[in-house]
Image 1 (tube, rainbow, N blue to C red):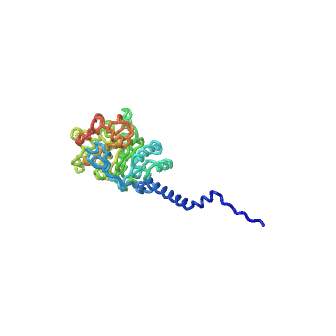
Image 2 (cartoon, rainbow, N blue to C red):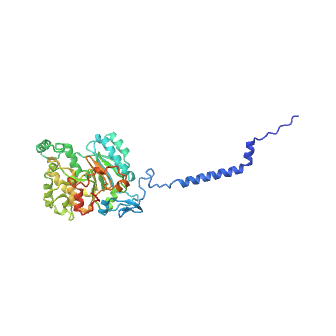
Image 3 (tube, rainbow, N blue to C red):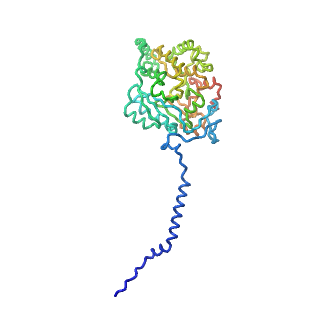
Length: 413
């Protein structure tokens, strides 16, 4: 009878059996060590700062006294220190504010870069809404592309015909003659009817559109604009906390040939409505002789941040209607920039108007670039300071704004 042979265990199995307890302990220790390393190396998450989990920004320190509180190396532009403003605390709260863009469908591919500049430099942190307005219906392509670019809610509206047409009180023969004469004199946009509609709409109708009624603040964004610097604070909340009603970046002189009767018409309004004129107005900014004539200085409205409630006020509404009835938007070529600027200078307290520095802005053909290198580096600006026109004394008016307000200008300008 054959004796069964004993099955021999492989050497490797013997070793595993012999050291099984030690192997288990070592493996468990390795898992614990890897877990601890992962926890230590992973930064704590914050739902407030994540654009996926929330549209509200994480709380940030407030800017006070020229520096960011808690960050001694962070500085404000000297112009903001001179204007005695502070930057608000980002605590996740938003204002009732919106971007406003007037555009047509064929403006799309010029506009997309403007949107990206605003979103990348500012709105990616705040996600404010965007209202697009057009005198015609927006195309599906325009809506698809722009709504994909903005971080807030995109809204699209059509301008009422009465806000984009020649009103009944305009004499057509007189209007046609005026356009022909302006064309003969090579006055810019002198014979353009659409340009007149745009200026009239931006002057006194944009804030009346139904899509803007839920908002208190606006930032106008045109096609072909560039924002060169990171904006480290909520501009709308800045306006509210510092009691500002109107903000600008560039100020310059208007073409006299486009507005020959704008100031005489304004003078008549002032004479009939003295109750609307602010006691601490900016007459010395818009006139060099106490109001006898208009200097032409105005705030360039291609960049305009302001209070919608100011435009809704009785003073401005009556002023615009008065100008509109005079026919100057058509018989001449009044622009929205001088109209808004005259209203701001006359009806607001001068302390309610703010010059924005540290932003970096361009609209053909002028560039605003911070003159202080430390501000440009800090805000990651990409503009060439040699192209800055802000402080040029001839034709441009920001220097005059600082002089009449007794504000200190940056060193070296």
